[in-house]
Length: 244
Image (cartoon, rainbow, N blue to C red; front, side, top):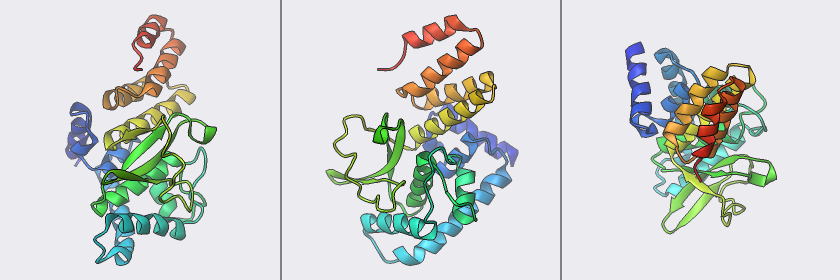
């Protein structure tokens, strides 16, 4: 079993693609869930969530309708969903969704959960990133391509399906599963940095950079960690090669 999880890790990082495994497993691995038994336990919890939703989307061939039903079901089943600085680790988000915790997660955690569930119904949701969403800093949300148009799914609002507020933003950067996993590694690095584990944080930032070389945040965060470790020359070299 442990060999299998190592193969999943190697696929994710060596191939630089979250599609080497499924989004749920990749998100669990990125947050340190390395027991195969635990990965199965949490993916089974997701299966049970999807089984409950299935009765509401059965016999519906329209992806938009199915995506809308999933969104509203999540809010109805757990009305207190969003919390700034809330959980982003998918295991915590799943536990909150299925348990008694008042809030489910932050924008990253909610987006990952929504996209996982959408994927189980063959809905090809992506994510979108804003450097300064709502004037409060980095922000992610779900987005669904529909022909020549898109439907944004703002997971932090109960009325956030087909949310129009970000459509005209010049900042938006569309992400797939790979980039979402990179953001999880960046968040993990930030947690490690905050608790003084600078070298471990750098490992997470490096994984984030590997998965999304265009994402500036892990470069900047890694640079700060290098400075804290007294590795100023490495930090200076890193800052000289920041992506545009």
